[in-house]
Image (cartoon, rainbow, N blue to C red; front, side, top):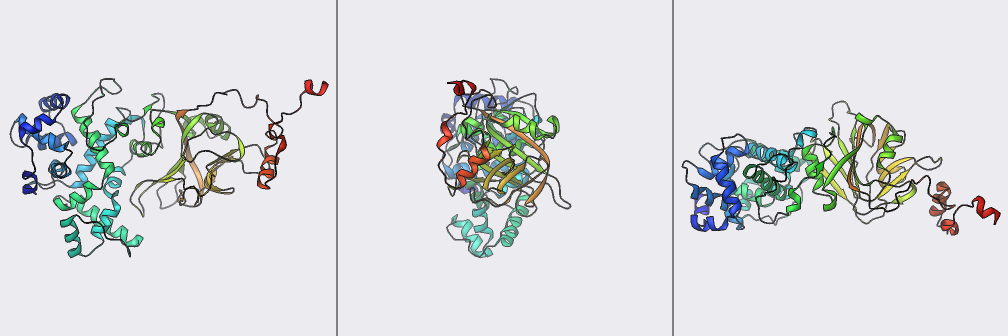
Length: 469
């Protein structure tokens, strides 16, 4: 380990030249600040070692920010303290990074969101393919793979049970001090894109502390190949809190959304605060813009309840047919009973265009809100009765059931507006003039299913003035 670092280290002068003026000033301020716990303690210990050499601190920080993959990998291993005389555990280090990162990402707003504890385990198991290719082999093969960092073999023969077993072995190593070698660290770090973002956020939070919500809190520590838009969390409506959207869930989901849907989030509906009412829910979400809808199922005996939901990119408008955008998503936050905990996100496949369904006040067609799948067999369905729903496997998203069971009872629902509507015609849909077909949605749906041409689709209903002419 030591040889691999020393052979490629830059000099103190070269390292100082690589750091920006802002980084140097931030580093000096940090070193003069009072001692803190958590990630700050890891960083201080790494930067200064046993002496108070500012040039050494600049050199070590430059190694963390280096665009040389090998220098950076070894520097991060030293930062985590995994090879120290009194080594830390990787799990403890990741937890500290996650805590600091969430404070930075939400810019002091994380207190408005619910608590959760799955993020560290999710991050540790994200490079699942790389980990299984190492832990799914014999000890001899494992050492060869780690030595050469060769991950080109296939994982044939690793079923779900075997995969879970090997991931548990990795998590057990990560939980014990000194059980993650430098070679195992390299495999994990180099395949952990999400942790790179979290590390960037943690470094930024620690070196550029600012007042929550202030414009001064704009400095970022840059890591190679990290997009800046992934480092800025949405601004939340300060008047609203969430029982379903946690800091980790919000961060993980925001990474999946279009950039323009990551700026400002406002809670439009909460069954806890607005009452359990389909009428209130539909008014809150109809023709508003892009939405995150989250559902928590009623807990089942012996099973933790899941939170799941959808991102809707286009406006929800009442219609008896399928509408929407291929940017829609389905997701579930897995509680970790069989798979590692955390979000599983499903994107559209192009198999069909059954992106969203939103209909009410009809007698022969489903009344409610659905995403993906087929009528009566949706990928996610919230019935207008507002008590029950279902989630089936859906080819639209290549998704598995989001809930613990296909049929679920609703415990709580929230809807968040993440991008206001782009529509120009914001008149009340009830008062707008409709065509003859639009005024008879059930008949229109039957004609569409029968592939019949609707010649009157653009013709308005007759009015008194038309009848007298």
